[in-house]
Image: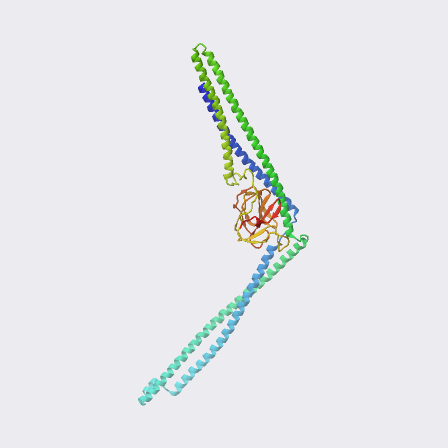
Length: 491
């Protein structure tokens, strides 16, 4: 009997442990599969909504990029032509100065040559030389005067020769400068001709682009206020997203209730099974007592009583063991539920393996004092008139392209795609009908269905959607209505 009771307790405990582990794994697997299904359904709804919006809008090609390229090329060529003209004028002025300097040097050379010729003629006519002076037989004073005069004449002739050599060197330098300047003028003329040809080609291309833009404008005269159309598109998108989010939340609520009811049903079934097991053990113990009493009627009354007491004790132990097993099953169930909740709260988002899950109670909306998504100069105040018409529904934070964009609060990404007028745009649902909108992005780092934390990087700053300067368009909406973001952001 003891061996039988021990085996029963061991089997019951093992069954309870396996059942609890299976329940925990099944619950986690079911929640994971359900999260994947919900994410897929939300993506399908968003894609259908985007398709409906695109079908409602007339297709319009913007030729601003092509026009900008043509105008920039023309401006560069004009600037280069001005630079070449300046170089040409500078070279011509330098050549004029070189010609003036050359004439002056030639005039100086002629004067120096005439001076040298006069010196040579004077020396020849006088017949003086150092040797003739020494051999003349004159008195020493006369010889000294003649030698002094000859020394002066020799020094003057040497000075004249040095001056002639200097003038010749200057003339050679001026000739080389003039040759270099003439080559430079030739190159400038060739480049100017090439640039003029390129300018004519660019002007023709510019006229072609202008003609294309004019044709497009004639087709788009019925769309006078592009900004209003963009706002209407955003409104329709937000309205559709609100409906999709409401449907998704209702589906999640029903699924939570279904899982809760299923878990309670399984718990009741497990408790009932353990209760029946305990009752069966009690009946087996009672039957064992009866059989023991029948076999031991011939024995002494004291032995019969001791045997009966022993059997009763064993029965009580079996009942207590069954109850302990039931309590253990309940504790294992509670531990599994705690582990599941801890795993939900601590597990990071892993889109490739298992999607991140929102908090059990859902997101709680937004609170004042939110962090800025990026740090930059605030432009376009909420409610003020826009330069191109309409009113600002959000703000623009000007900062460098590629700057990380951070989520202002935890939530789930419900839209991540390109939208006309806003470029690459990402929308996060924070619960309680609050949405935050991030536009003009260079790249989107999250996708629909991703759960993000406050401060997590979700995109990078860019200049998409027809923008000229990089920056982030930021907007907050509550129940589909834009609100002033500056009243919600901290300092």
